[in-house]
Length: 121
Image (cartoon, rainbow, N blue to C red; front, side, top):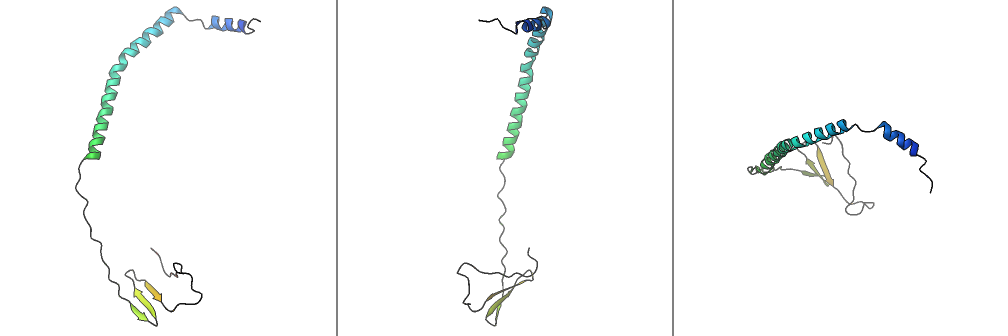
């Protein structure tokens, strides 16, 4: 089996990035000190999250009164028959016209042609 062709490069990299024992102990000490502070922050974050959840649940489940019942406004339409057509004036100022005799070229039941004149709302 042949030797690793990258061995000289590997050795040079290890020598260039060799860790200083004092730096390693300082990094470990700082990491452990930061780890000791985490639970205090964790309890504060957990308490804050729990308070937010409680407030949201109270808002969502708060009993409210029933919605007011609104009676629909009724409209009375009065029309007249003129020349076999039913003419109905509508409250918005437009007029509906329907009726008349059936034509031979009439579409099948359920289909029809509607002519609309004026502004639609």
